[in-house]
Image (tube, rainbow, N blue to C red):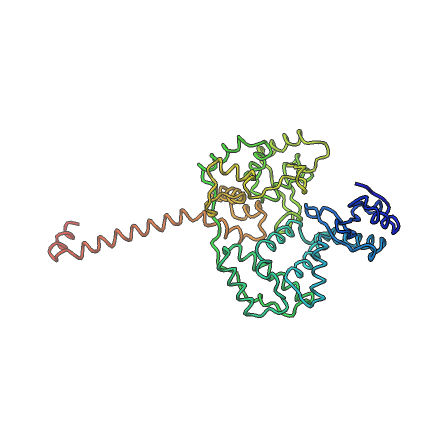
Length: 424
């Protein structure tokens, strides 16, 4: 493709001769001049954004001058650097001019503020990725083209009703948390006067209790033998450390101290927003030492993936994911989500094994990086109830037996009771 220095005379000649359909500016590589089949002449910005090619129409030539096109292109590039889609920004401005304020407008403002907080070290990039996923899949469809400044308490109740009838309790609670956060942000920034969702409480949800049985763990480990080494190592490290999927996948060599045998997870990665030091057992250190010896010079990640925009292995839940492949091979995948083994279940399984071995909850809390021991108790203490339940069942059985003996005694005649007692 041709590149040249954009000037009014140069572009005017191209328009007359029609020699090219598109050419690039030599000063700003993302800026292009395009002539359509109908003769239209437009400046466009073309750049990869969030993993996809994004085209932004800047304006028509010669109404928009070359200088204006370059200035607008730089403004768009700055927005993209902040994580804002210039096309979405233009739509938001048009709607504001039309006196309409949508949920999508609020989310874009919230996202820009989130980006600033990430750069300041106050928030995590993973948290924003999760927020965007929740927005696209669950919260945005609830509002669509509604002017959120016109929402009433009744409108809010209807939104909550849709969540309750169409989503699981867990998903509904995450969606409600995001909606509350966004509307609180809007109220704090003076964008809205009232948060109609503030009064709604979370839905009651059944905590997930799925853990690996001994037989299932044997099948899982056997299924790993047919996997590429990198995926096998990921699962084994997860089982040996009990850490969250994101922390394991994004593990960096700079976080590993091979001399002390510890893994220092920075606060920027930890869900509790506090740094965590994880002891590495000898089997885990053997895996890391082997991977270190095979790692490319200068490689930062323990589990690298050059095709990933993050630079390390990522795990989705789709058909081609390594976790889906492993669990299907081990017979641990199910269409029933409650029975299906998830990656997070490895963390729960590790903690449960510790609890069954008699490890104190305070130590398990520290190992998992829970901000409160109440979280550890709520999540894992039910696995310690088996002995208590067995004792209560024994009491019930004894009580039933005594009731039976009592009934038999009451059925005896006075002579039979006297004879029985005399025999004692």
